[in-house]
Image (cartoon, rainbow, N blue to C red; front, side, top):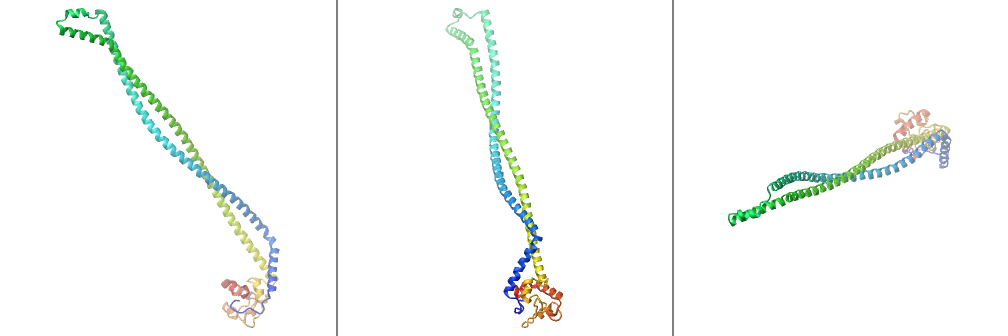
Length: 340
């Protein structure tokens, strides 16, 4: 042990090397009992790692596709909002034009009614002229009471003639003007309605694009979540299989150690290589310089401290194994020089 000088019973380095070779040979002998399980686990790990790599690549691709779909949906939503705003303005303008059309139609109806009344009055005037005849200019001159009266009568006659000839024309002119105005407003409203229809169509199309992009992004997100769950499960399986491999390897090493211990007179409660180096596996060995004894070369004070009776080399194999195991549990391999 490291708190005493090395025992004179220690084997030479050639014997330690032979012991290491023996351990390796033992491991080879023991391998068939667990190599198949470890090989199967390792095959699963390799396959899972390949699958995990493929999933990781697929996840990366799905992530890029999902981001692209989300960006497309966002751009389509922005364009849809813009078109909706334009359509709202267009609908307001169309409503204004609609009110102007209604107003012009009412105005035209009024002017048409006036024209009908004017034409009716003109027809009545023509009938009166037909029945009574136009006033004769000579009669007007002869019946006039002076020049002023003559002028007055002449102006009156002219007004009658002008009224008869222009009344219908003036009313028609107003009607045509109103009708023209109505035509202009109706054309403006028709153009606005056509513009609104195009905007509405474009908005519906971009809304369809947005819905498709959002649906694609949602599907990709679901696929990505599924891939992540599968990848997480694979990683968990890999960790579990690796733990089983490590456990199997540790168990196999322990089996090899136990086999070597049996070949060397064990089994021992600490690694056989240390025991063979310390005492050659001799439970009655004594180190004359330090007083350490037994297969594990335990100092008498340490032996007594762990409840040993008498000297270490006089204790039974079972007692030496138990106390050595306790020392190993408390101090580990550092308690033995040969473990260094």
